[in-house]
Length: 149
Figure 1 (spheres, one colour):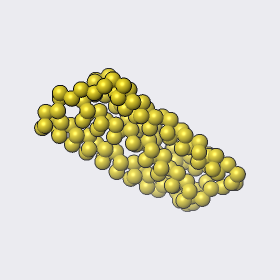
Figure 2 (cartoon, rainbow, N blue to C red):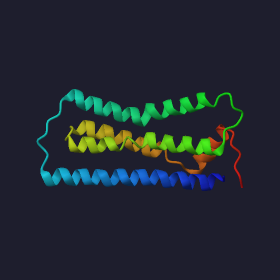
Figure 3 (cartoon, one colour):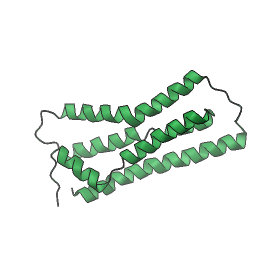
């Protein structure tokens, strides 16, 4: 498969997940505003746990999954295009779990510092794991996949 076509396929999955998360974030904010849920108080330990989980899904989990995939294919000379596509789709899904922590943050009315931190994690994940053509081409080269023209 051509890297241009593959990047378009991966971008479709990426945008579906981002748009769904954005719709849920807007819905959660609207729900909170309509029901006037501003009085909820959450333990600081819970805020730290939520922020840490958001950081794990943005940074650690994708790195761990990539390392696992590389370990799994280390003895193979080549991997199939299907294996590569499955890997990329799962990597995108793992990284894009981070915006869903914004929904938790909104509904539980976490403090502003935690909200900003989770939002920064989500923006990092959305930016870094965007499947651009250049990135897909590089990844295909790293995993020794020859593009089909």
